[in-house]
Amino acid sequence: MLLQPALIHRRARDAASPRWWVGIDGGGTSTRALVADAQGRVLGRGESGASALGQGAEQAWRHIAEAAQRAVPGIVLADCALGLGLSGTGVPSQLQAFLAADPGVARLALITDGLAGVLGAHGGQPGAVLVAGTGSVAEALLPDGSRRLVGGWGWQIGDEGSGAWLGQQAMRLAQAAFDGRLPAGALAQAVWREAGASREALLAYCAGAGQAGYARLAPQVFDSEAQDPAAAALLADAARALDALAAALDARLPIALAGSVAQRLAPRLGAALQARLVNPRGDAVSGALWLIQQDCPAA
Image (cartoon, rainbow, N blue to C red; front, side, top):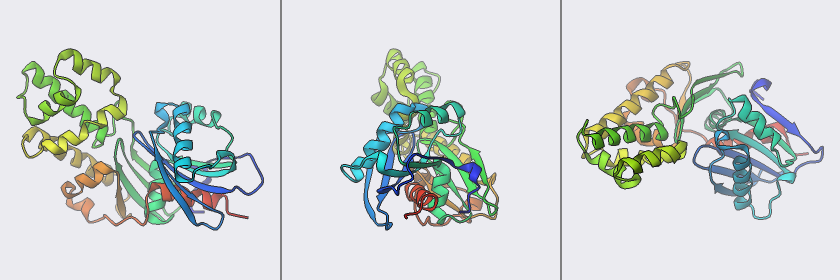
């Protein structure tokens, strides 16, 4: 396998061959599962809620199990080899909490969700992925098997160009418009309809929003673009942020886009990035499945 061993967190509980091989792509909004048998035949796909590790290990494992069971009803994690590409693995305390909460899967191989996206997009070969969904990150697999990671600092302070970032900027604009510091354009009014049109309602929304709550406001930015220059300016800022992430990676590597926000921003991306874009061979969940199939081949 091309990946350097230090990039993969492994655990094996059972020497017997697993019954199912499962790829998991887990982020701040959803968890997707892709299940195959020992012959590599895909048996089903499933989806559940968020499994970003920053939202808690218990929730992550619950949604991983739900996504797998929705892919193949009756599946049991104790009989699974899991390839996991999860958001939040770079925070040691979150990673250790997740591994400690392991419900007893047969085997697992855990990497970042961005790296799973790289494996899926480039079939395990060197390349890069620019991800902008709920969060944002640029990640590359280099020819020597090492990883290059740019961004991905978390929605609280980073993740520029992501859905959560766009939602935060939209909320700031809505608050300023409520105060009369900015005009109450189409975007501010859309946020008020979603979160409430009083100071108390806006404060309450922010207090409970978290990553997913702010990301829910991102579609309002796109929908308001034609009527509101402020929304158009935010989208231009988001595209420039994604350009900067890509520019920090090795310029020789091809880049695939991943995530709903990245896809919607694609026409706005700069010429240098456009020249490097390639169509992905697969996605992060297929990359996670590829990982565990390579790491735990069928007997």
